[in-house]
Image (cartoon, rainbow, N blue to C red):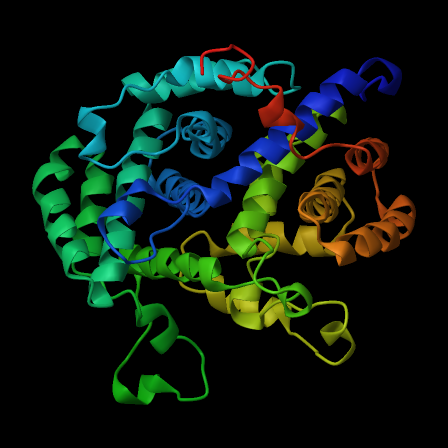
Length: 405
């Protein structure tokens, strides 16, 4: 049932605090950045690609899989790191993390299901097939990134890749995961763009698109390029705004939260749609409110090319086209989440002194009060505009409040 707005403002504030908090995952680089000068992914980028690997693995497996469970777990399993941080393989020998307490505090008072904590506990013991899929996808994502850096000449990434080939592959709990792993170990991270439709037409030189599992791996590498794709409003303010992965990641969670207040929707379609909604921009690029006046982007062609070699391409393309048509409640929730995520980021930038963010907030408030499709989103808009992006950590369990300095 739709929510009762008068009795849920406290929960809405908690939900907004949760969204601000998980937004900080983009500022937490993977801990092995300490061990090399290479730019390794932040946690948002790692989680997003892990979710895609989990989804593709699940779709390839010939047994009954709870896709909703896989997707929620994929986006949840590392959220505790907003409070615990990330630690490399040497630091793990000296640090203990209270993950359950971190999850408890992170989710307290929000509209999110208590089941998320149970899902994460399942991930730790890995009894269910869904937990095994996500655990395998996590390992594969790490191996993919090591292959990317090794191909760029980072020597230690090649060493770590070989260590993982020797030591981690025995922990891969699924036969299909081992098949993917062996393909990743010999893959070429640049094949996706060389073999794609492009003006050089490398097909004439024998560089051809991959098939089967190798095509999935090329897709994962293409997804990884999103972290290098800045949203184009950085032209006006410098390199301060989220990249596309960071934006999409929080849109996924915003859509999940908005759906909690609306009529029951298909959660799998909702999450897949949020994961897909800006994916065309890998090949079509992003456009800000000035460049939109001068560019004509063929997003449908870009999307078809990106998905063209996947077995699941038809279902995924259908889901994306539903988002573009905006006829279903699911698509409207995702569109609202997409718009509101930008408002969250403008509030973050405003809190750090960016003067133009205040002007953009005024312009967007007028626009969104008319264009948002769900009543829930309009309530969230009003609450976000008066919210404090820093309230979540100032009021969280910390040594100032607990006097443990």
